[in-house]
Image 1: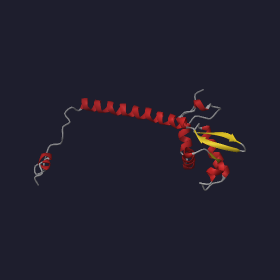
Image 2: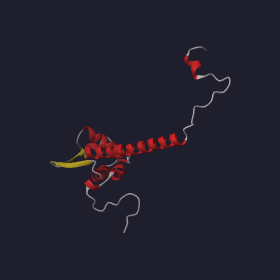
Image 3: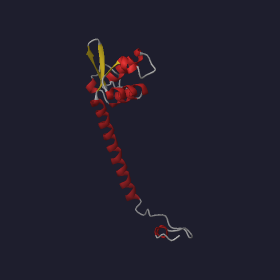
Length: 143
């Protein structure tokens, strides 16, 4: 049975197998992006992260779970506190994926340019209309 198109289902997929789609979905929310910015500065507890937001601690915990499931943050126990930290590898994988996508489109656009150049070799600059100054007259400084 084939999987329908769209976002992959989360059926026990290991973090290493999750792709950029899950990470982009996690980053789609402004609150989660704010949490990542805070965690980029230092490891923080949920209560420290709540202080900069206008949402409940439970909501912050849910956002952190989404980020953790996407492989963008990790948690560790420190006494009775749970400290969250940014996982730079998750962001690096996104950047690598975007770089690959950019290379793909640059190659495609270069191929299109080559094709258009071979199909329309007679494409010349527009002819000058009478009374219109030429580029050369402007360069000389004569007004």
